[in-house]
Length: 193
Image (cartoon, rainbow, N blue to C red; front, side, top):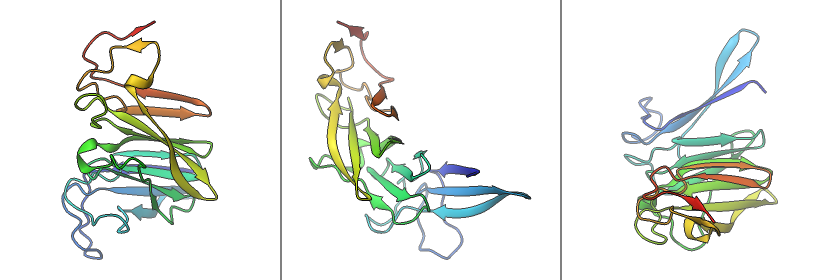
């Protein structure tokens, strides 16, 4: 597939076809390349199955696509969604422990590989203030459910990213059985023991 998928978190629906989606409610736009060039295939907005769209949802701030699944983060709303390869049937990715909230930045970073999804939540208060968390979801018969959650304090042999404001989970990369997590605001030097 020659697809171009663009996240537009500052987008606002002005078509009049939908209710006012608010400033920075966001969208994802999918283009497909044909013989004559690129054309619009689909425009996605935050599904109404969750909370209604609102100012600052930032739907599309993070996107990941692997040919089978499209994952979209809406960190302003503290939400993330997964859709099938046809960009239909969106389902919310729900956190088991109830820590999902508007203020935790859930959905700031997303990735998908081999039936698993990683979602960062930089402001999750795990072991301090805003030091972050990464949630892993696994697919079973077309549905995704949380299977684990990773806090910086759970990583053996690494120190320095457990302090307040480390933003653990600001970036995630998932490939097969490997997960890479960014913590751009660590407050002290990180060392390996």
